[in-house]
Amino acid sequence: QVQLVESGGGLVQPGGSLRLSCAASGTILSINTMGWSRQAPGKQREWVATVSKDGSTNYADSVKGRFTISRDNAKNTVYLQMDSLKPEDTAVYYCNAVVRASGSTRWNNYWGQGTRVTVSS
Image (cartoon, rainbow, N blue to C red; front, side, top):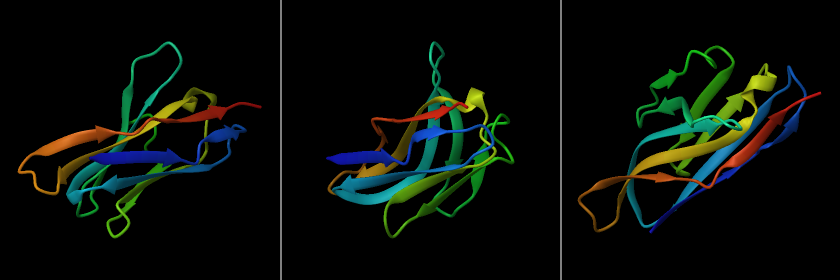
């Protein structure tokens, strides 16, 4: 069993910063790609950023230059540093991880429960 738990969401003013964390735990043998997505009120979930096991990153155009994704492989944790936040960044942010659990030959994609980010003055 694998669990992902996000933290770090909250209320921030436009132009401010927040750092999200997502820790994976359980019977983990290896983690491949980790990432973040978000779902704004009334909209579909959209991809935000991913980081591979070797640290290479990709970003959605809407956050490029403002958000930074990183990971700590020793802690099975992925981070999302969000700077220059805008009201349109308001959403529930979800992390995901492609995990090979101990005793399994398959890779599965797991999701966290989400953490809410509100950007408002």
